[in-house]
Image 1 (cartoon, rainbow, N blue to C red):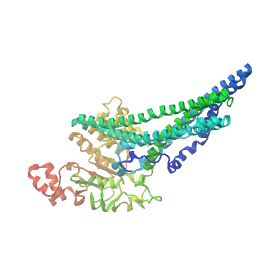
Image 2: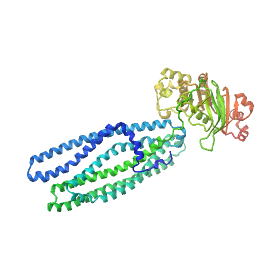
Image 3: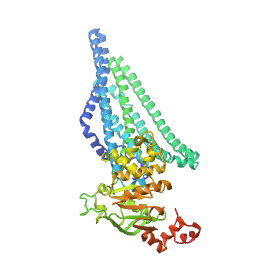
Length: 603
């Protein structure tokens, strides 16, 4: 999806997009048909009153027919009640149907967002995606309910008035219709200008959403580096542009509606001028003149409504273009139609000459090959940017390799079901993400198969019970958004408990103890030994003290696997790992120069 897609205008009416919108209406065709019938019935009721007035003036008043006048008055009452009932059912049905359509569309968009790969989210700001799920869906709801269906009522009213006026007196009808060219000119001017102003409004509201999401999420960083004034000034600029775009839009509306009223008044003046003279000449009845005046007032109201519906239609075409652009984004990481399963499921992992780049032409991994045997514990170390975390991203199929392949028990992971593949791994990240809820819900993550006893056992095993027992409600203590009420170390302990509770075959630790103090690290080492027992473990770490008892250590440097072996074997090589070790445990000044010479960057 292009970075400028918030500026999409598109056509005022795009048949291709409308055909794609129709399937959202089809499940509710009964409700929509009922609403259309109610709208047409309401429009017919609106056509009756002026003609009833004509009958009273031309027939019953001159004849002194009080009974006839009473009958007309009764019909007026019936029409008012009928209009109220029909309008009630029309509004209720359309709004209820609109909410259901909006629900269906949001669920489809959210389901698609869940399936898109990480590369997509690398390119698209969260604020823009939130606009798709919220504002754009709301705009389509306006079209599919108050816009698309209500057009039938306006069109029916216009046609009905034109037919009635032509039947009553064709000469006076021509007089009433003589102002239509002015109406067309005003409407075209309004449509052309409001289209551009609407594009500007949508562009700036999307930028407001993106800016707010980024700054609110990073409030701590903003405050730490004293960026409040600069960010406020930037937001003031964006918000000001959005305000100006709205003011411009208001200007066109402020001109359009009075202009239509002016044309309506001009039509009434012409009807009075010509019709009054024809009444005096007995060419037109007085009742017809009064009815014509009432019909002319009703005639221009649907024209105003239709012009406003044009704005709704324009907005909906732009929103649908963006939504369908999102829905048409291919799911790059997907399960094959016929997933392959290993003949023997042991958990053997192999990287075979893997090359990968986030940005084309800038490979992060270059020809990396290694094997992790079932039950083996390996560690991956290296400088920042050497590709350690990328190995995990590729193993979990957050991204697909560009060259080479990754296999589990001899099967290429691209041939496996994605859910099955990821179901093999328990993951503990450096940056732990907690959701709003309770501590227990963040450990089990909605998996009802994990009982309360399992949760309690997991938190005890990683010694997280030490701080949980001090909380007011224990495991039922509420967790704020992103775990804001917990320390970094406490969140990491909960991530360990989560990995334990899920009891996966392969354990992945991505610098999992980097934010845990020394005392806590000592406490969880025993828990890690229990956790790693019988499981394949892949650990990424900068603290070399946490990986010295691993079976093998892989040393990455500039995207290549440069060294591999046990802790003692790598020290004996006196290579990159040796320099990393001395940097952490010896005087850094004694090794800084050779370390820099090797091109290794300390994190």
